[in-house]
Length: 154
Picture 1 (cartoon, helix red, strand yellow):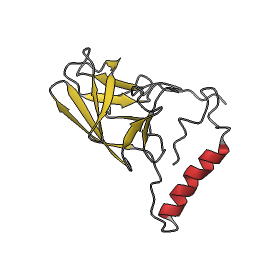
Picture 2 (picture 1 turned 180 degrees about the vertical axis):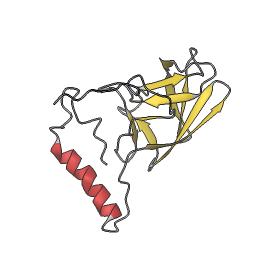
Picture 3 (picture 1 turned 60 degrees about the vertical axis):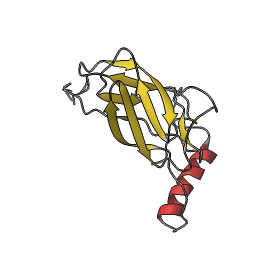
Picture 4 (picture 1 turned 120 degrees about the vertical axis):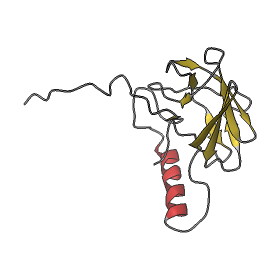
């Protein structure tokens, strides 16, 4: 899987920038099939730990380190929830190659989501190798459409 959240457009799931898609897929092939070790993925959620009011996220594929793009920008696209399962926009910052997330609206956090809104073109967590983080959620709560039944008409 090659993440293309940074090179697509909100109204078309097929990025016009095929060159960067190809480079990302080639990096996967070179590493996994041709034995040429290199970073080939953006940060992928690994674990969530909570201490007091802070949720700390760790990642695989952090490569040479985590960054926000553009440089010195705030991290965007993070949401946090408490036991009430209501998600609120959150502030997030990179500390020691982890992402620390918090919001006064969720003082006892239990779950975090990143890039979970439809067409969230503002997400900007990358590794220093240039690969974007994959959207994720730390919860396994039922979604609003999970119980919806569809009727197929022939």
